Image (cartoon, rainbow, N blue to C red; front, side, top):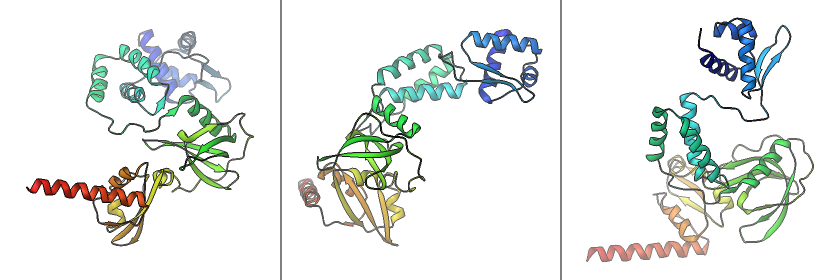
Length: 317
């Protein structure tokens, strides 16, 4: 028989691995009597774990959600995953939780065995975030919108458009999507009677929350993430690229919409927040292209051409 402390850990692990166990199953796995099992269940309850007893022939024990946070039991891989996620959150895409994530990480690393602490440290030391979030989401906004998605409450918000104008939107929220750079809300726009995608950093929630709604069929599969950046960036362009669509799609993020024209040509719907950045995105496609606007983009491409020409002339001297 296991020592009492080790037996409690094994019992907790079993309860976490499955929604329901009969008393006989647990007693058999732990190699204890039903009386000892009841004693161990009582000890877990004393520690704050809500272990519920289900009466009846098909009853048994299950681990419920408690009113307070008890100690967690994590295996090695789970502990490394949690610690790594906390490190990412400490400098990540949700504002207001960075300091909290650091505090939680410190507490976790204090109790990690040395072998796991070294693994977590290696992950942190030898990884980098090359493209941090451009527009992190506020914690309050995250909670409010996800709660509305869960509870199926319509929300109203003021939305800032590409040109700086504002209008009020009334939507049925479906899901928040993070592309790595920005957060987007996928929702049914009530007044436009269509699915829409909204940049969360351009939203200002209104109160109170709207009425409840009946869920609709899921939005089109290509609504998110295909075309998000181009559709919601300040400057947009339709670029004809003289290369196969599959080849170009492999070079761009999944948020960029690439449409095939024929076997050797495709159209890229590019977007960016400035003409210079948009020109850079197009040049990074590493293929011949044709574009006829907007004028700001054409000016930016001419400026790039001038600079490259000047650099190569100076280098040849």
